[in-house]
Length: 219
Image 1 (cartoon, rainbow, N blue to C red):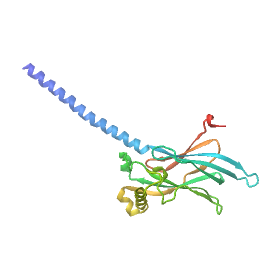
Image 2 (cartoon, rainbow, N blue to C red):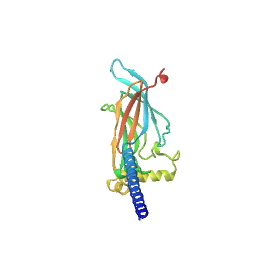
Image 3 (tube, rainbow, N blue to C red):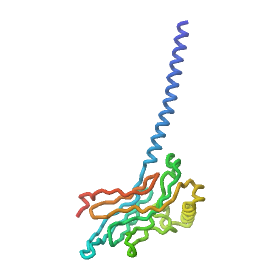
Image 4 (spheres, rainbow, N blue to C red):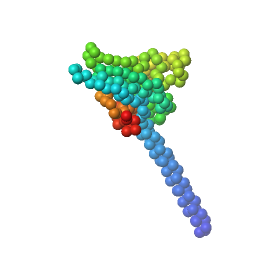
């Protein structure tokens, strides 16, 4: 009799342990999923860097002439061909179209819609009638950071043309899970000796971070 009781108790203990292991597994899995959601919502990517290559002050007008090197990165972090712009002034902004997807795609880390899409339209300095601007990407072009082929083929152009039609039409954008599409213009006072990094947050817009140029790169 006691042997039977021992076996029953042993079986009960095993069942209890298995139950808690089962529950613990799902709680741990939920914890990992929750952590991934938080990571996806707070993740960010470097999309461009800017460096002042020349700066001079006009003693008469007290205005700066500033030349910047604009280096954009593609979605895989590879640098594109650098562009150089010279402005009368040093408060420079970058007009950018940012397309945000619904939060559920960000939470899931969706392969195609897991972070905002952007493209740089132009760099500019506001100065009334003397406003200066330089085109970076034409709205009809395939954004450089997303190109699969260089130059893009007909099929790739058609895909992007259709995407922008969806993104910019409030009724159509809902069909592909776009939350909103808006123009942003992050900017800063650009001075020598600093690297300016444009960062896109996967669930949001663009910001500019700064850091000093490493000593080894200084002349």
